[in-house]
Image 1 (cartoon, helix red, strand yellow):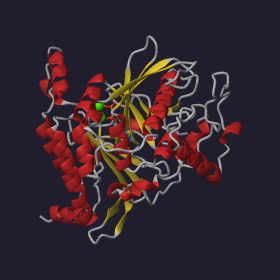
Image 2 (image 1 turned 120 degrees about the vertical axis):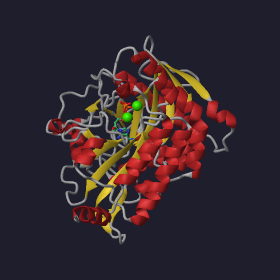
Image 3 (image 1 turned 180 degrees about the vertical axis):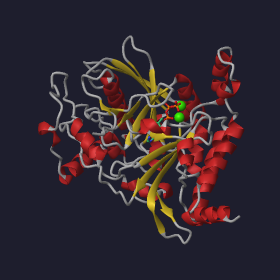
Image 4 (image 1 turned 30 degrees about the vertical axis):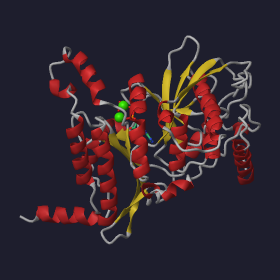
Length: 438
Ligand code: ATP
Ligand code: CA
Ligand code: CA
């Protein structure tokens, strides 16, 4: 059976960290959102606030299960970003509440980052390196104005930047982002495309063991796949992608990729794997003694009714309005188990077809796939990589393999690659017939 991630319960090594992350987010987000909205100032971009949580609580912070420190960065900027991305504050809090267990995606990349899904799969928490953290703070203003001018940006949507530290533990920086893939749709294929071919191959024979693996550039080319958009959609997509990459070039960013998820409408949703996963997940109790017991569905899988869910959301909304900090121990420990679509996303063009961007033919009639597209991993600054390269230089003879490509050519190559694979089915057929003519 396919499981997306590992559930993070009390027995998980990262349980305390995950719990503290959620508790901190919940506290800081509701604190900021409880205030009357106001325009951003320059100081908001540099702002940081530190909070100490402990089991007794104090005048500022409520009591928590564990002792930890939490730092909140540029809360007003992220509040405004969340609003620009049309997130409902109460919804956001619901998804990331500390009561609900996350799932951990381990560390899919080489970078050592950890990924956690919110239990409803709408959000991803990614731990980031200190250098990435510093860099995001540095470029926050430019990122913000880019989002302002490009509501349909394909760049990762950042919803929060925080730091957590447990006593004697190290500082863990993390961002909250959108999960590109919709909770309510099976993604049949996933690709991470950089526009490079060196080392960009997922071993095809490993696909049997791991059919959900994220494939790379060479796998894409081998399958002769295309982002099948007719000229209208192609233009919209290409122009936005180009504007986004130009920003990344200007900020001297590299190593990002186009994450592509493909939902095949012919195959539909037969696998429904996320619903299965949820059965493996179990809501955590309030205290460690509230043990989750043996795994398996058991009595924990009751789905709250739509009414209950709506009531919960209303309560939370009310609390945010009344400027009350939301108590840590909410009465219900259940999440809405139905994987709901994030309907507000529909206002954004690349999320407008059932959460994605549907394939089209030349005559603009819809095709058989929905594409989920985003430029991800865009916090790697050229300067940092350059320093690392210096370190590695002495260790390898093949300079080509370790030498980072400069941000300018990296971006140009990226744009060229994406442009080259964006073709309507008719365009692909025309080219094939032209090739076969002697
Ligand atoms: P590396 O630096 O080694 O490339 P990383 O740790 O920085 O890796 P990312 O490149 O950001 O990680 O992401 C790794 C994988 O995680 C992606 O290929 C994708 O499968 C998944 N992923 C990342 N961001 C998202 C997202 N927003 N939505 C869905 N999946 C994502
Ligand atoms: Ca990456
Ligand atoms: Ca990375």
